[in-house]
Image (cartoon, rainbow, N blue to C red):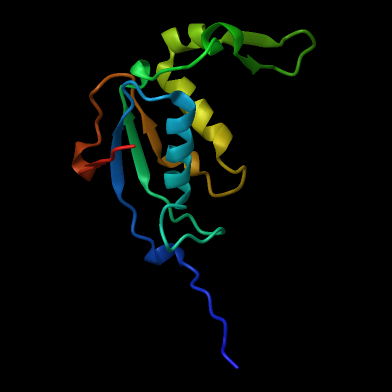
Length: 143
């Protein structure tokens, strides 16, 4: 009888890399889905659900990401302060003009599991082409 053993990654054994992704002319949802998978570590053979095995992602040119269809006018982001009548709605177009980096962060965070691992802390998003993470030597990643 063979023993069925599975590999479980340990927090101390995980080797994390840094990747830089250029979001120019990429579709927002498709890029965000792939970034969410890399942040969780699902692209690695050592993926373990209860251990953070993901890599760091630096996204540049977030202001040049494409939003398809009529989502710029018809899709809204909502926030509420828990007071009556305080629901605020902002269209994707308005939010994209003011905060393109925050829009990408919100979309990716919505695709990540809501647990104690906090994968969104490994995502760094910048509206322009420059980023301050050159010391980590991020590798360019084509998606």
